Length: 252
Image 1 (tube, rainbow, N blue to C red):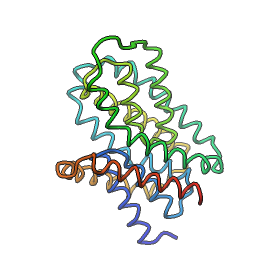
Image 2: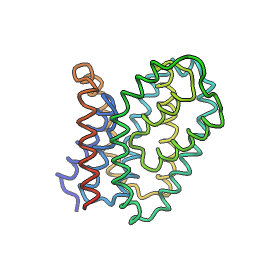
Image 3: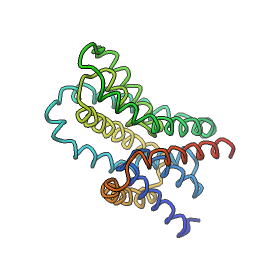
Image 4: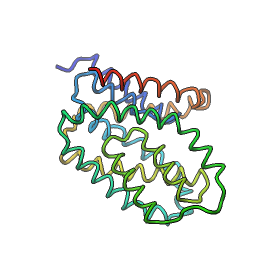
């Protein structure tokens, strides 16, 4: 039976996830455990969390609309690839037994935590990379984007960092344009996952109704907090929390 404390917990998890994503990224490392904490099976929690945090990707992409209009070619070419990867990842997730997913999820949470820690180094590398000599093989870029899309739909924690690394390797773009493309592809991946999960997944819609607006509110609040609390302060805290969650899930 759902209690007021359960509702407060997932509302708080959604709010914190939105705020954390606005400041540093890694919000799923808070919202996903919140759903598990109220007794949701891990696979259902993962699917419900993916649907709940989708509004945040819309806002992020809207903020980069100018950069996306300036260079639409990569977005046009990579969006179908990313969505195909997402369809594959979503299908694999729904075909995965709860027992297998329960065994895998601690490692996925740990991977997301590691990606969160690596994010500043990846951003510095993107900024400092030379403007020649890049591997511009679209086949390699498309394959990497497909894998990132599959991962994003299967779990999603750290997806933005993974896409930033992939795009940084294969594209000679500024950090702002790379971030814009990363956000738009993340939106496409999560949109596809949302549709698949809405049709076929074990989504708990009342929880989505609580978490989604709270994540939007948290994102708005986080944009203001970001001016006072640097991401370099929050990121290691969230990553450390993710490691603790991974350990707890592994031994539970």
